[in-house]
Amino acid sequence: MVNTFFSKLGDYISPGDRVAELYHGEKDDILSALSDIVGENGMVYGVDLHNPFRSFKYRKYYKHMRDLRKRHNVKLIKAKIPPIPLEVSNLDAIVIREFLWTQEYVKGRYKDYINEAVEDPIIYIEMNRVLNNQGHLILHLNPTDEKKEKDGKGNYHQIIKRQFPDFKKKFHKRNMLVYQKLK
Ligand SMILES: C[S@@+](CC[C@H](N)C(=O)[O-])C[C@H]1O[C@@H](n2cnc3c(N)ncnc32)[C@H](O)[C@@H]1O
View 1 (spheres, rainbow, N blue to C red):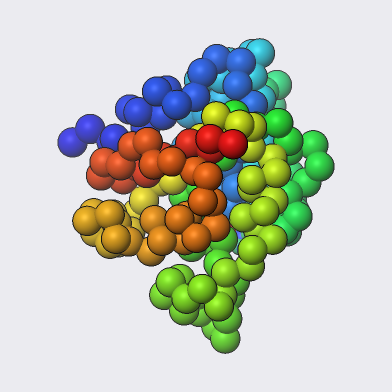
View 2 (view 1 turned 45 degrees about the vertical axis):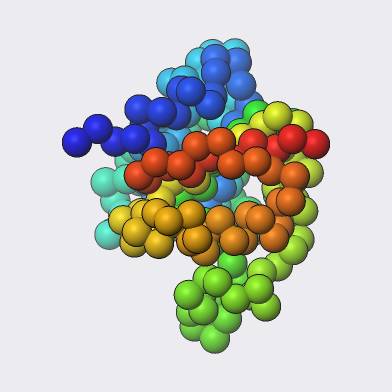
């Protein structure tokens, strides 16, 4: 089956764009795809708390990440969000897989990531700050998210409506949810 996310990424990101994947984790697949799309005149930032991953479990991806670091249009930054590091600014798109990482970790779990009380507004203020007007927030949904978001009443959509009132939903199909910043 066609992977909607990867086949549609190029509809929202163009050569020369500045983009960031936040909370990218150990896998390089999204960062690599972004780097291919933005090309030599663009820039891809990856921001994660544990960057790079050195654990035995992630050794395969660690090698991929090391290779990715050699690309001139990729910069991986080890940082805790918030804040979003200063050089990660003026973005045409923010990409996140597993948007629940924008939720605060409360008592050992993410509280099903629906509770307003666990939403740290600073994280969303930061995302808004670094994203250009007309820029896109692109979410990759895992199979569980996909089911939840299907009817348009999912957690992510609610969080975005609360935290980004000026963002407009542009696309939602299978594992991809896209919003555009309009102010
Ligand atoms: C499940 S993992 C990877 C998720 C990744 N997006 C994926 O789909 O493979 C979640 C990641 O979020 C990162 N993370 C959690 N809290 C963070 C924070 N406050 N700032 C930056 N990274 C954070 C962790 O280091 C971890 O790599």
